[in-house]
Structure formats: C-alpha cells, structure tokens
Image (tube, rainbow, N blue to C red; front, side):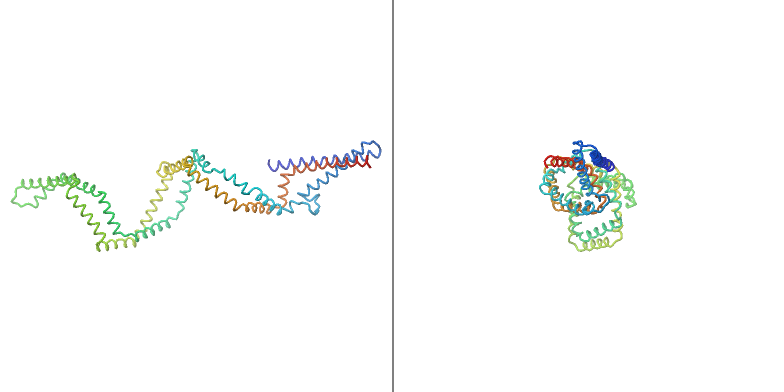
Length: 414
C-alpha cells in the first residue's frame, strides 16, 4: 500500500472508533434524560454500559493518541512519546535487531546455504548475460585505455626499457642468441635461400659474365675462347651453388656454422666486441630515439586494443568470449573450484557480518535518531495506527461490559 492509501485506511478506522464513542455518548445522554421521566428498570443497565463505555473509549483514545501526538494539542507530560523518545527508540530498535537477528545462530544457517558459484554459473549460461558481460568489459577497457595519460605511459615504457637495456649483458645475450639459432639450424634456411638465389642469378645473367670475361681477356685470345671460358664459369658456379643448396652437409655450410659459432664465442670474450656493444648500448640509452620509439610502441598497442574492442570478430573479442565460456563451464562443472569459491565467500561473509553486525544497530539508531520527530510519529502511526484503533474499540466495549458488571453487582448485591 502507498502512504496515501495507508492514510485513508487509518482515517476510516479512526472515524469508526470515534463514531462508536459518540454512539455511546448519545445513548448515555438519552438514557439519562429518559430516567428523569421513566422508571423502566432496563434503562439503568443501558446507562451504566454506555457511561462505562465512554470512559473506556476516552481512556484508550488518550493512550493511543499520547503515543503519536499531544492529546488535543495540550503538552501533557509523558505524551507524544514517539516524537520525544525517538533517539531511545532508535537505540532500542537497533539493539533489538542486532541481539535477536544478527546472531551467530541465526546467520550461520543462511551463510551455509550460499551457493554464489552456482548462481554465477546459471547467470553466465544465458547468452544475453554473456553479451552483457562482454559489453561491460569492453566498455570499461575502452574507458581505461582512452583515459590513460599517453605521455605518462610512453615515459614509463621508455624508462623501463632503458632500465632493462642497462641491466642486460648484451654480449652474453647476443652470443647465446647466435649459438641458439645455430643449434636450431636457423642458418641452414638462410644459406640454402642465398645459394638458390645466386644459382638463379648466375643462370639468368650469363651475358654479364661473358662481357666481364672479354673485358679482362687479352686481345690475342679469340672471342669464342672467351665465350667458352664464360660458359664454364657460369655453369661451374651454378653447379657449385646448387650443391650448397641441396647438400645439407656441404663444406661451405659447415664452414659457415663454424664461423657463426666462433663469432658467438668472440662476442662473449673479446674486448673489442665488448667495447663496441657497450658504446652501442650507451648510445641507445642516451638517444632521444628511445623516447620516440616508446611513444610509437604505446600508440601501436593502444590503437590495436581499441580496434580489437570495436571489431566483434577480432582476436581480442573472440578471446574474451572464450574466456567467459570457460569461466561459465568452470563454475558449472569444476567441483573443486566451486567448493573453494563458495567456502571463501561463506567464510568472509560470515566473518564480515559478525565483525560489523553492531554497525547495523548503529545505522538503525542513527537513521531513526536523525529523522524529524514528527516524521517518525507519522511513519509509525501509518504502519500500526489502524490496529491501535481497535484498542479504542475494544476499550469502549470492554469498558461498557465492566461498567455493566459493576452496576449489576452493586444493584443486586449491595
């Protein structure tokens, strides 16, 4: 019910209780007047009933009214109790709630039935909820990324990058990197690719070889001899590079491998390599290009993230969907995770409630205490005033019956 409906209901029951009092007053006046002219015996009983009923009605009207108002506006002591005692009411109400509701015995059964993991699982199983969660995550990620200070992030990347470079042993890192690549056979693809390209280039440019042979040849040597020599050179080189390309165990390949391993060892131990790489590192650390590079790195990362958040089919969005699905499946089927989460929530919820339960009493006490006294009286009267009107009705009826009983006893026994 709305407050207006409660006011109408309260007003109706007040009229009923007041009307019953007025009825008793009318009966009392009527019987009093009739007894002056008539001697009907039953009039005395009716008068006694109505007289006592009026007294009971007035007494209970005063009692009920004194709870919420000053009767007839007269500031009689110990009336308008709600308004004048609102702080004590708030304190008592807060203590009552804490002592009777927020106890370990009452809280523990409810906490023990908490199954937040199952609730999350059921919630995540619905497609519209998955979409809602994905949109919310995307919204907050976009908000965080766009509101980040680009200059600060770029400076952070630059500083951390410089710190990393400063602590790195570049010689050892480069040496180990070359050794690792050789051990994995990375150079084999490079050598094979270069040999193949050289073979093709020589075959396609035989005329250049002929021209070069003629330029270097003596005037006394016939041209056909120069051509024959050029032919031999191109075909020989072609076969040689083809052998390098095809034969994984070719001596050239082995020589290159040994040279790379020796280079790795030289980088690790030779002073000239240490000096060269130290100068390179110092130049990199002191170069303004590092800051520009850091800014470019952050811009690239930021643009990629924002594009991924805008594209429903991006790898970022697909990964997000997969993560949500995995999370839903985990909450649905992984009993160990479910028990761990529920136990953690139950333990911390119980601990937090028991630790701060008195704050609930303080909240109730402060809230009631901060209400305007008139507002508190009105709120309580709207809630219980209707039922209190029956006290007035009952007081009228019971008072009348008691008065009638007293009249009977005094009339017949005394």
